[in-house]
Image 1 (tube, rainbow, N blue to C red):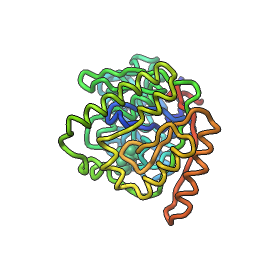
Image 2 (image 1 turned 120 degrees about the horizontal axis):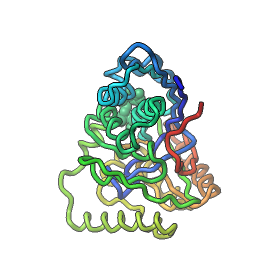
Image 3 (image 1 turned 90 degrees about the horizontal axis):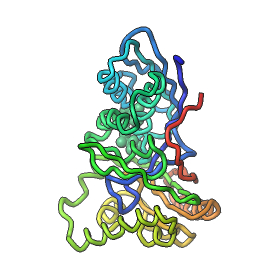
Length: 307
Ligand code: ADP
């Protein structure tokens, strides 16, 4: 096999109370990529369609993660990477992570799978760091493993796969505004009151337990973020209205996807997800902000071969 076509999914990081460690994988939106073995040694990003992204290997997230893997494995061939990007960069649903994961997943397949998914995550972290200026894996892990993932630690890298209840759906709304990740980080407090920390870890533990036991009502009671959301939500116009509307129309919870501007809601069942979609659409339709909205089942497979 000399060439492979893959689907690399969008992901939601943080998931309210799981800031920087929890994430889940989507299945209706994602990038397609073609990875090809070449006789010429090296890593070459030959196409990046959809958005204006750099083709220089060292400036493209897919190239940087591929290079990290290439330099570690030293294969006796080279690789070409074509990116067909559907996930808008900076939308908060893991655009850079999809690219970082796609190149290393594809190369691994073409090399006969020498690396496990945790090792691939370690290479992808190098690419993701190009976009976000720090090493984190909360979008990478769900894109690679699928479902819900918990990044227990970055060094040493330890990723836990958390079970996904069968009937869990996400509704994502993406207002077309720009939030710089750096700005979204800078707005966060350096210290947290003990009382808030207690609430947060109680919610986080409960969310993980709810996911393990298919307890949708516990998931609902746990999907609260008292530490990050009060600050970051100020950067997202109409966040309060969207959240209130989503909850009124059956969402188990609603929060900021990654550092925004996308906002996710989780629901039990497709019908509820569609109700939430219709209701939050109305909120943004009354504004002059352009937006996309979509519903997705939680994707338990992650990045996959499509050709
Ligand atoms: P997201 O959370 O949607 O991934 P980020 O702000 O973390 O958005 O990353 C997007 C940044 O990374 C942009 O500045 C973009 O130009 C840069 N970038 C470089 N290569 C890629 C790529 N292959 N895919 C997406 N973004 C890339």
